[in-house]
Image (cartoon, rainbow, N blue to C red; front, side, top):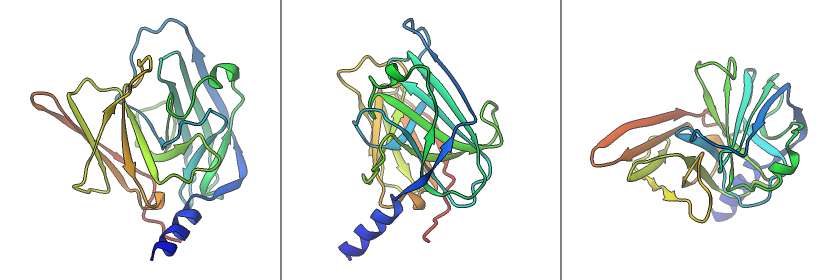
Length: 221
């Protein structure tokens, strides 16, 4: 049973040899930061490795726009990577983009640069989004997904696939936090089984829950 589980985990995290070249990259960098980040800044494989390349786990038959929003923890760097998909690639795929801030990006790691990726009809509108798991590693073997938040709530917790087992979010220490200041670790045996994310927040009174839908549909083959 254990051997079968490890084999499934290994197969699900194989990196596709082909590379996607970004159609468009919009980015900015500023030493002066005035605006904090959005509620959820990143959904990615847990890693503290230096930033090299962006990888995104694609479902089968993807034919929408791939959008990846990148945000540094200090709020100085922001980027948007856009790519029209042709449905031929699936699994973890490297998304190549030529950044004019390559030196800046190399100073961040998988804990301090957030990536939130999704499929949609477009990347700049408010249309329906189907979320994906990203990674900054070419060997995304870890079975833990980290959700990066900017939240002023006293308590935050997340669950996946309508489970009643929640993971508590923790405050990020020893970093200059602007765009996100909390992280939530979720144990995931197989990314293809991710269908939804449920975020609960609470101060003295509960705050409206946040739900995200993944693009995966329990793909097992």
